[in-house]
Image (cartoon, helix red, strand yellow):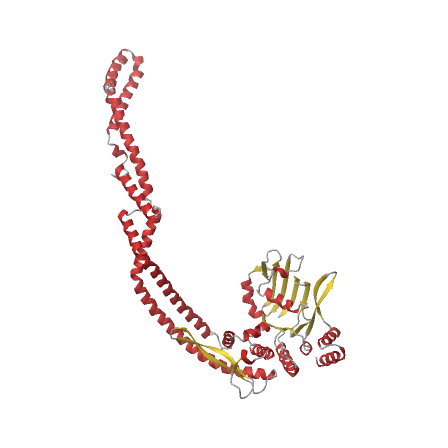
Length: 538
């Protein structure tokens, strides 16, 4: 249950703390005092958005905190709204969390029933959803969603296949042209860079060959260095024998002669042997290949790396087109199988819905009888077929009712008044009270008594009291007959202090409760008498 709610700097509320009890907690006050903002604060921490303009002027942020007491321990939720950015942050048990996490918690924390819920009740789609919540178990609903997802997945695959085929058929001629142009050149990834490297090497080799020839000319030219060095070496041998101090010079001349012989042998080698890492491509071959690649790049408007990838993509696309018909045949067969499976699930689900509808309608009639409706009121579900796929029909239930004998069943939106819708919604909530096992979420009723008066009001009050005996309830009401049954009563008052408007939330004691009930009853002797009567009965 919701044990504590604290609101700071939200709209007209500067700082309010409400400590709720089990059973029925009522919030009363004049119209415009801010009662609905209390419930909006609860919705805010449960994940609903809120405009930053609702942060109280002058405050940096609005903060709402709630303490829920659950069977497995306390749960504290805090949410802050920034006045500057409009962004909010949510904390669960003082740890930063997400709004999705809070929304997951919401079904076991609160059920908020308002006048908006009455309007939802008029929606055939919502009426169908209501029926589904009263199925004995949700296994068939889960099976339906799974089968429908599988069918949708196949249909989506067929649509994507058709769309891709249609696009590629239009491009086929161009794709084949591109493919042939690429195949003519057959470029390889990284080939252009490798050719440029080879071009540089071949140019260097050409220059090196010229230098080799010049070097050999120097050695074997008119001066003929080798012959001259041989003559010099012989002469130095004779000089060294006659003059030993020339031995070092003789050795230097001999060493140079031998070095010159080695250089001559080295220069005479085939230059191609030096660069044996490269193939036999000539410089003209390399430049011709680079020119063809350059032409292909200009023609296709892409770099070489992209062209290599494009070739694979084109090949894949053309292969896909060739296999398209086979793939579509396979998927259409799968579509038929998935549709048949969905149809079988829906047959079982629709039978379960019709059975649940009979039981639900009898229970609704019983609840409406307790809420002041005629004993002759009848409620029924009519099932309308809805084709969700070719040959697959889902039957959606729509609530119909006969308020008086002799009339034909009519939709709720045709004949139900606001007061009747309020009681209808209350009847449904009463029937769903057992959902969730032992733990029951807090019920929130926002003026569910709208359009109700007279003796009917007493019936509604009794039903609300019965519900409050089962689970905690927060109730906004303008009727003293309802407020007088509360376990805890809060008064919401708007006041002006020093030129500033504030909303104050006060828990009332017995004397204050009597005064509030008297005010709600019209005041004066009549209001006092009604308040005394209600206090005595309470």
